[in-house]
Image (cartoon, rainbow, N blue to C red; front, side, top):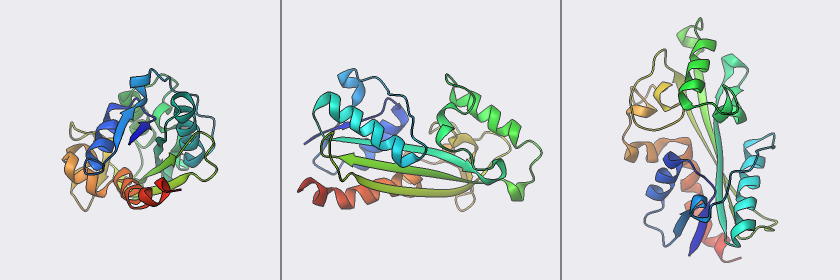
Amino acid sequence: MKIILASHNEGKIREFKESIKNISIDLIPQSDFHIQDIEETGLTFVENAIQKARHAANVTGLPAIADDSGLSVPALFFQPGIHSARYAGPNATSQDNIKKLLTALKNTPDEDRQAHFHCVIVYLNHANDPMPLICEGHWAGMIAVNEQGYDGFGYDPIFYIPSENKTAAELSLARKNQISHRAIALHSLIQQLPEKLMR
């Protein structure tokens, strides 16, 4: 079964494909269809994920999966939130975003550097599917003072997980795919998808 993955992010694509490798699904990145990203105008992760999945399904006529995820830091009034990918500006790189976040937390004591990654994954049978499958995942951690590790993407080098004594960028992909916010949401999707496909 062919399903479009509404993402151009190579890191996300790799994590998705690794997580569903034992399922009989051909997950095709939207770039294979030359689908451009749409402007994310939602006010929540759920709204943005639905927008992306609906756009991909509409263009291709195929079922679609999309995720929207981001980092929330209570000390920064839960920023960057839904703006995580463009925290430092519309064309910001991951390094730009990390630099801005570390600067914003420069004088913040360790005990106030808590953070959470949030992920919402949406599956649509078709563009007009009135009952999208919505799965969520959350991952608690801290913002490190300095970058550590070279794997992962986005804020991974500064997202420190105390139970692992590592940042997300220091984890193996296999371990990350067991405990991350996206892994939790994907596990929920894998459990619920068979029933959804029968509707």
